Image (cartoon, rainbow, N blue to C red):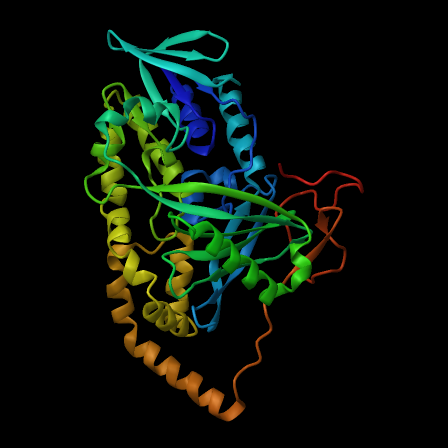
Length: 425
C-alpha cells in the first residue's frame, strides 16, 4: 500500500511510522520540521500507554506531581497526582515523533501540500514544488482547518469550535499544574510547567470580545498568584480548538472512501478539558491497525469500542461542569481523599465520564466523614495557611542551582552550558 499523510504532528508522524513498520510506503508532508503548538503540552498517562517511549527520560519533560485547583470564588484545593502529568515542550515532542517516523523509513517532504485530487480510486497529492505522488490512501493529520479536511468536508458534519489563547512565560517553571475556573466561562485557565518556561492559557467559547475578556482574566490571575514580575517575558499564542459534532459516531466524521482523519483534523478533542493529544495518539494507532488489516472500516469500530459516547457525554454536560455551583462543590470535595483520587484519575485519563457519577455516589459516605474531619480540624487548629504554588526561577533558561529542593526535570542533561539558547519558537 502507498499512503500519504498530511501533517507531521504526533498523530501524523505516529500513523506514518506504524504503517511503514508494516511494509507500506508512506509519504509524510510537513512544512515545519518542529514547531510549538499553542497548548499546555501535557500528556496524560493513558496517552503514554499508546506510546510508552514517551516515558523515556531522554525526552525532556516535567512530571507535575500536584494539581492546584481554584474555584470561581477562589476556594483552593491541592491534589497529589498518583500518576504525575508529563508535560513537554511541543517543539521537542513534535520533532521526536517526526524523527521516529523517518528512522522507520517514512519519506518526509518538508513542503506544503497545495492540491489533492481523487481519480480512479487513487489520490494525487501535489506539494508546493509541483511534485506529485499517487497513493492508495490519504490521511489528514493537518488540523481542523487543514487542506485534507477542507477537501473532504462536503461529506462531514461541522465541528464545534472554542478558543484557546495565552502566553509562554520565560524564566520560571514548577512541578505542579494550576487550574482556575470562573463564574461565567465555559472553560478554564491553566498553568503548565515546561522544562524551560511556563505555558499559561485560558480556553472558552468563541465570539465577539471573548478573547479580550479572557486575556484580562488570565493576566489578573497571574499577577494575583505570582506578582507582576512574571509578566516580564511573555510570548503570546492562540488557536481555535475543535471538538466533535454534537451527534453521530466516529464513522460520520473520521473516515470515508480512501481517506481518514486523525487527531484535531477529526475533531477528536475533549470538549470539557480541551485535551486532544491522547485521542490523537489513539486515533493514529487505531487507523494504522485497521489499514494494516486491509479493513479501513475497522478504524471507526475501534474508536467506538474504546471511546464511544465519551466525547458526546462531555459535550452534553459542558454547561453543568462549568457551572459555578458545581465547580465550588467539586473544589471543596477535592479536599477529601476520595474525591482527590477521582481528580487524579481524571487528569491521568483513567476515569471515564460514563462511570463518574457512579463513583462519586459510591464514595459519598467516605466523603461525608472526611468533610467532618476537616471541619473538626479547622475548629481546633483554624484554617490552614495557604502557601501558594511553587515557582522555580531559571538561570539561562534552566533551573537555578539550589532553587528548589528535590525538583527534577526528566532529562539526562539538566544544566546545559551557559549561553545555550532556551528551547522554543
